[in-house]
Figure 1 (tube, rainbow, N blue to C red):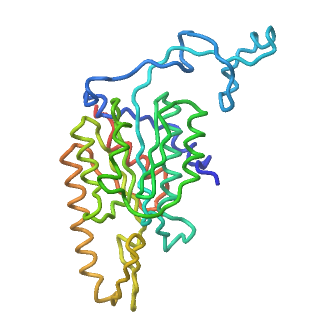
Figure 2 (cartoon, one colour):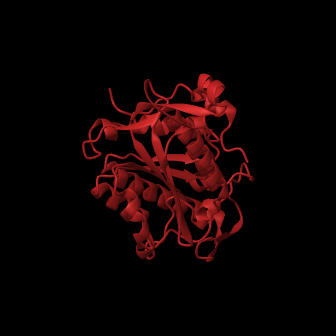
Figure 3 (cartoon, rainbow, N blue to C red):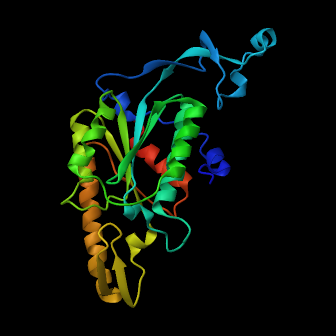
Length: 298
């Protein structure tokens, strides 16, 4: 499975993201951190590792030692982005227009493309995938090898279960001790009696960890283009609802719009506007919309 499409990468090559949350000092006053990488001021040599760009190998040193070494330099990193991905069962929903494409698959490709952008900028990023069956965590890192590690972990993820309960989230808060900002990727379909994504985002915000939301839906959830008699299965509770589509369309769309407005208002109150993308939307378009929503102003 290839998560990054060369055409998409080429079309987003001009993108640069300087988060306004960092620019405005929301990360406890930290604007950047020093790390070693492919910078300008030489720092040291280290042994070559699979995934390191070949252009960073010192070929003169190789000729003398018959070993591969990579030149490291002191470089600034603008931010650390922790990507939190909801892997509950509702993320397995398939598109009705593109049946082979699910919310989770779209999220995988979207995140891999964003990480490619962060890698090009020299930023650090980590991945945390959550459902009530267990958590998957890839610690923060940078560079091409780290980007490949994130992509490999994304490929292994499956959608199952529910969003974790409050007790199920206790073990993950240690990942947010250091200043960072958080990208929360979900469809934001949840059951309030067992857990709440809004509470999760609010706790991060209160700790000075801005939580930037990306909502992924399928087009049919926005338009309800159904006719006849329907049986709707909730994949997280296994409950079944039977209804007449034509009779329910108006009330469904009204309730959906009210829920969307409430969700957007909660994040807007934290200066973290909601970006919504359907799986039928080209990744380049939704990525540009997300960067524009959270870009430094001026």
